[in-house]
Structures are given as C-alpha cells and as structure tokens.
Image (cartoon, rainbow, N blue to C red; front, side, top):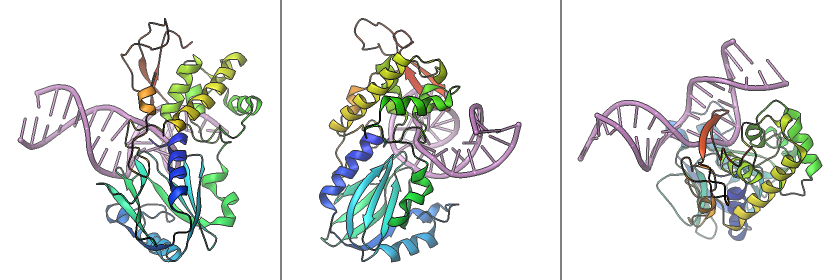
Length: 281
DNA sequence: ACTAGCCCCTGGGAGC
DNA sequence: TGCTCCCAGGGGCTAG
C-alpha cells in the first residue's frame, strides 16, 4: 500500500513526465456508486463537476509529496491533493481494470488513477492556502528531511502510554509510515510493536530512529513495495516486498542471523502487526 | 483527550 | 464449478 517510499516513487515518476503539460479533459466514475459524505471530494458528483471546470486548461507545474499525499501543482494557484489510501496509484499512458479518474493531457497522453477499492481522497485547493489545509498542517515532520534524533524522540514521547507501532503510524507524530514500514522498522530495531513508548530506552529509540531512515531509503531505492496493488506510473512493480523480514511473514523463520525465532502476528490498534518474539524485546 | 470499534470498498483466497 | 465467508487496512467518524 502506498506509504512514504511508494508515494515518493510515484511523485518522482510524475515529475519526469508531467511538467508543462496542460490538462485538456477530465473523466471520472467515482460518484456513480459512491456518494461521498464529504462535499470536498470528487466522489461527490457536484464537486467533481466543479473540480473539472476549474482544472481544465491549467498547466501542470510540478508534483510533490507530503506524508502519504501527492500534490499536483497547477497554474492558476491550484493544487490537486491525492491521498492514494490502500489501492490507489497513478499510471501514465497506461490503463488497468480499476481506472476511476482520467486526465487528458496536451501531448495526447493520459494520466490515469487506478483505485480498486475506491478509498482515495482527491480534491482541489488554492496553492497559496497550503499551510492552512487541515490534511497537511496536522502532519508531523518528514522522516527523511533531516529529522534529528532529539526531535523524533520528543515527538514520540508525547504518547508515553501508547504502543510504539501505533505511534510510528500516527501521521501527526511522523508523516509517511504505515503498516508495512512500522513492522519492518521495529524488526530491524529489535523492539516489539506492543511496547509502551514510555518504557523504551534511549538506546532502543535510537535504533528505531536509524532503522526508520535506513529502511525508508532502502525501499525508495528499490522503487517501493508492491506486495499489494502498488505500481509505479509505468505499471511496474517495486521490489521492497522481497526484502520483508516481518510484514506478512507469520509462521516463517526469523531471518536474523542466529535468531531462530518464528514470526508471529498479533492485532495492535486494529491492524495486524508482525514481529519476531525472540530477538524483538 | 483518549481509545476501541465500525465503516468505506472490492478482489483474492480458503473452505465446502 | 461456484457459492459463502473472511481478510487486507488508512483514516474518518462515533460512542464510551
């Protein structure tokens, strides 16, 4: 599912093909069977018509990532925000069975959005109001943006009683980490996902901090994780799923040297957590 | 202010 | 073969 490395991969791909292209038409069928309760989402037909009218004729300036959100900056002080949620991904000049949004571009090609489970959240806002946008201003710092250990630790420790996995996945603490990477980070750091944050030592916290940076960077270098539906904009799979040590490996041997543990699965905060009961303490 | 639990959604896999 | 049931889960929302 798209977490920081996958969204980064998508945005890097989009920035290679989209800048300076004009949006000439927009199509969607999101609202056919899905009536969004939120007025500001293209799943709402009225909103989609307005969205369409406002972006046709605008040029794409560039794309950026903030947390798990894709921001497509357009001319005319407009930005499209896309949260891909579980199964969403952009495709350039490609289609698949689950296209629910299609931008026609001035070079004759299409930017499409595949979203099997239709969980995505997509809306338009005024670029200069970015700092006031609730979806963005509640996000914590970017883990790969010179996030110091001191800052990381102090943000984590605001939730002393909460479980470390839940806190790592809390977007207001640190932005961009979801279920896959929280499992992998904690496996690497040797810390159990259900440990209360307040009972984690400074040495362990440092291991979590450095594992977070290492693993996110490693996944970006592998083009992200395609165990589920994620594909890059050319419909190619990433390779991080081949590196999993914990996520979805319940019942398999822990691959840490000399460990001998068997990966276990448990539910934490309504999400499945995977960990090694031997070397993760 | 916190958390637990439901909801959105649909394909894939297991079981019969 | 084909049906039913369960599972995947980010994040919004509500009830407690």
